[in-house]
Length: 461
Image (cartoon, rainbow, N blue to C red; front, top):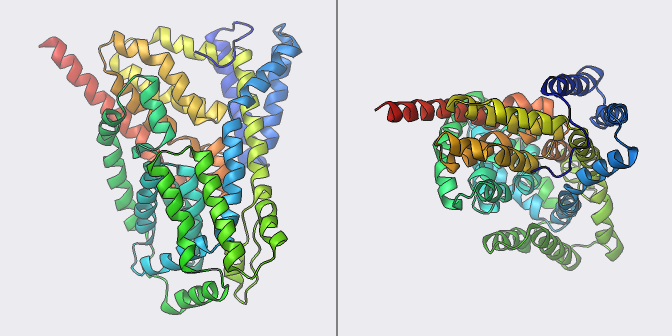
């Protein structure tokens, strides 16, 4: 069940106290001291190593736990490098400028945040990847929000909500496939069932974004300034749309994400070499250092100067630290103790569904990895759901509602760090406005209560 075997057994009470202290320490350093998440995570690693040595665990076993924990994120690390390259190559090929230019024609009304949420949701379902959606159309919308002088926090919240709506509902999403596979549910049956909680969360979120949207839209002069500056970059051509088209085609044919991103990046780079007045070494240099724009309009310079492998190093370093931290939580027995205690003590249907959501959220907070939150929680609760007569699709729905969508709300998580870095908005800033992500676990617990009541009535009758 666990990726790293525990080397000692600790009581449930000791594990819970230790869990609370670790979360409190991490929260204190990030919220009150204002440090980057790396610092408290590293301090947490020091604390866990000391704790493990006190429990007579050898340093070799502790080190192995860190390494094995970090290994679980290596696939994501390589994807992050490619996404950094994708952003810079899409800028230099004109793809992102073209998306932004077109976006100005879509936000002529006053429902800006609702439009951001709806369009990002549509792109998210099409691509099946929340991170790719955020790094492409999300970056474009952030630029438009800056031009409108709209709230960066609310805009980022709408982007994250839409991207993770797509991540949940797309048959192309890896987390959607994982949640259905872990508990042996047909993929499309799983998507149909999660719509019972996902659609209400989408509708409520859309209405709230409508109400929060600015009273005035972007002025024609503002729009013209940005569009003229984007046009004057000389980056945009009709071929600028080809990298996006290729990425969508790869997604439709279920080409692995690594190959899809690499192919789109290579095509974009090739188009830049053909169409742009940029030197050979400069184009390839953007793969590492990103693109730097030089126009007479500073907002566009700021908007287009980003991307590259270098921009992902902050994210990659934190992911490795966080997953190593998670490996130590396993090898010291903290997480196994909590999960096994939960499995043994729960009896009622309502409590099992609520505990499933709480566990998925807890694993996200402790480890910062959405795949492990789905896998560990699914394995832990499968037998409990069968014991009380709940179908596996109820479990797969809860895994998505409380596992997938919570990861971007954790400042030290894989998704949280990546999104904050790409959008330039901190997790704590956009968290209160990621309404879809916040509503999903609440609605699934309330829906679970109705399921429990219906089940009880069925038994009594």
